[in-house]
Length: 139
Length: 296
Figure 1: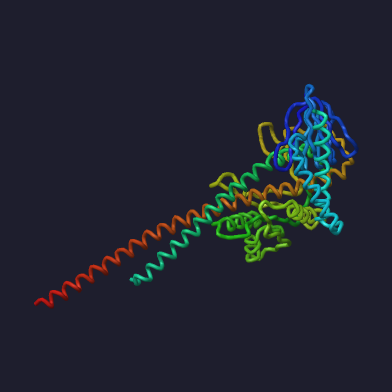
Figure 2 (figure 1 turned 60 degrees about the vertical axis):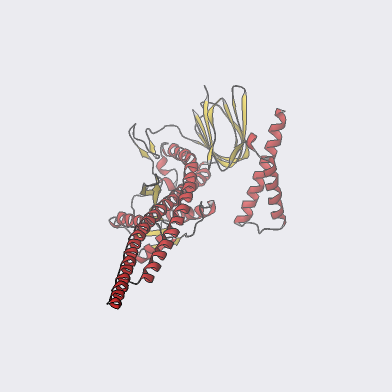
C-alpha cells in the first residue's frame, strides 16, 4: 500500500505522488514515514527529503517548514524546497560567496537582515552539499 | 460659442488625457497579469496549509488546544484588517471595500478598531472618524514576507493580549478581470466548520477524528509556530488577491476614461468643424456681398 506524498513550497508544488517511504529531516532527527503511520506534526530542519517508490528514489532539499503525517498521506509545507536535480550549483555557490562576504563586512547580529543572510548562507550550503552528494553517487 | 483657438486647445488637452489613461490601462493590464500569477502560484500551499489546520482542529478537545483556535464566549471588541490601495485612479475600488466593511460592522454594536494596509483606506477610515490602531501603507508588490508577518504579529498580539476578541480580514477577492468580490473573513480565532458531506469549502471538515497528533518537538512549540505563520499566510494571500483586484479595477476605470475621452474628442471635433465651416461661410458671404457692393 503506497502513501501519498505532497511537497509544496510557498510558490509551487514541488512533488506529488504515491510512494513507499518518505524520509524527513524532523526536529528531533531524521525519520522514515511508512504507510499507516499515526498522525504526526513536526517542524522540519534544513535537510534532505527522500521519497522512494518501487526502487526509484528522488531527493529534495528543504529549508525548514512543517510536515504533517496522516495514515494515508504526508504533507510537507516547506519554506523552500526543490528537487536535487534542479539545483543550479553555480547560482548556489554565488549566493554562498555573496552571503559570506556580507557577513565578513560585518552586520549587526540579531537584526532582521543578519538573520536573513544567515538563512541564505544555510540554504546555499545545503544546496551545494546536496547536489554534490546525490549527483555523484548516480554517476 | 468659444473661440476656435480655445476649442483647439480643449481638444488637445482631452487627447492628452486619453493618451495618459490609455498608458495607465496598459500598465495595469500587465500588472494584473503578474499579480494573478502570484495568486495562483501560492494557492496550492495555502490549500495544503488549510488542510493541516483542519486536521489539527478536528482532533478531540481541539477547542482548548491553542488560544488562537479558541472561540471566546464574550465578544467585546473587534479588530478589522482592511486591505485597500495606496494609489487612486482605480474607480470605486477603495470606496466599495470601505462601504461594505463599515456597513458590515455598524450593526454589530461592538467597538471596532482598524488596521489598515493601504493609504487610501486609511485616509477614508480617518475621514469617517474610525479608530485606526496601525497602518501598513506602501507595501511592495508582491509584499515581502517580513511586512506580512509584521501585520500578522499585530493581529495575533492584539488577540492574545485580550485587547480584541475577534480579528477579521476585509479585502477584495480576485475572481476574474471583471469580477472582484468583497470578502470579510474571520481571521482569529481560526474557525473550522463541521459540515455535512457534500458541503465544500476551504475550512470545512466532514467528520471529527479520534486520532490525536504526535508532536515533534512538543505541542505548544509547534502550534505556536504553525498557527501564527498560518495567519500570516492568510494575510499574504489576501494581499496578493487585493493587489490583483486593485490593478483590475484600475484597468477597467482607465479603459472607461479612455472611452469617455474618445467620445468627448469626437463631439468637440464636430463642434469645432461646424464652427470653422460657419466662420468660413460667413466670411465668404461678407466677401461676396462686399464685392457685389463695389460692382454696383
